[in-house]
Image 1 (cartoon, rainbow, N blue to C red):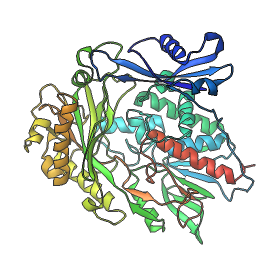
Image 2: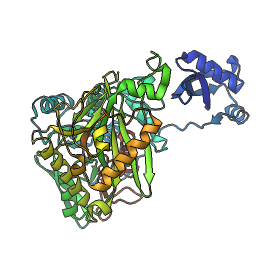
Image 3: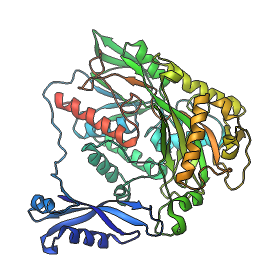
Length: 527
């Protein structure tokens, strides 16, 4: 097919007019066109008096696509390669076990089950329905279930997020993953956006649908079942231990997510090759969504054809960065602890993104200079910050918070005006200079002042910072080779965000699919 890029139209223009302009750019007559559709669109709001939609349109002709594309500046010929699965002939040495039912484990299990491999999924948390109950009980009563929370349970941490499907990786498998999201209920029009998102409410339905398909195709999803050990003989995986008993295993796809600290310790004790990994820490910042919209759209803010404004900001000083992460338009700051005596924040939006506040993590990169060189020193650094936040919030899972004006002046206090903190369990005035190391607070202040130049009002005195945000990515990496197997342990496949090989829903899902394909390439399905 041909992809026609840089198709500029007034924002809000109907799809038909966008496609028509693309065909004019291509110089194609309707009789030549087999089919044409809007592939992706984004907004260009740099000139706030003339906000444009910038789209990519996909076109299939009745022939001659490659020659036609070569003659047009913004057209690219793309050879379409169907998604194929190659199956090996070796007999499986044991069941394929998958630890974790986040995006990586979920998409690996879905593909394997459809191809006849009948995987067994172990998920320490609960099903979507039971998980929602556990999370809501924590948010309303402060009663934390360490086995099932915002970090653990069906769908992984992304189930209680904005459901963003953006990624920086350029992998052909991204198209397959998006198609699967669509097949399981994600709105097709959302998947065509340059920054697709599903929202936590619809993402839960997608996760439940994938669960049903895995079971229908012979897979087994076992909730409330935690991986607790590995059985290794002469460097080869033979089985796994769980809190419900032992299982034989020929392969283990380890997709446990970035918060499975007990699993990291177990892997280290089992002899897995691991290393500490840089990550980031910071706080959630909240503004009124209307302020962000004005900062991005100017006088056009509030126009019904414009989506809630979203942003991505960053600044680097030497080898340290401060940046915004997981921006949630019209969303909430949510309690996200997974262990008792610790406070963790995250952001969440529903599909409509229609809450009063916008929020995002403002995070500062940290590495072994900040927390040490032992494999688990990053974990200990996270735990220290989270425990400090718990103490500062009054030991009740309330979160420490400060208004931006006070923070920039080195003061404490919540001078609340236009922004009402959305953190469900409430906030307490906290001293962020005592909460974070100096190098982190200094970079946070630098970032806020610079970001205010890009979005007017970003460093408004009454914007609210709520802490702490520590689960930006995994603090460890479980080392693997080019065949995706763990160094020194045959049959173990470190996978996804928790193992240090992904950074969000899409890249984690792609990594899960990639490893499933690798296993199928070697082994035949179960008889």
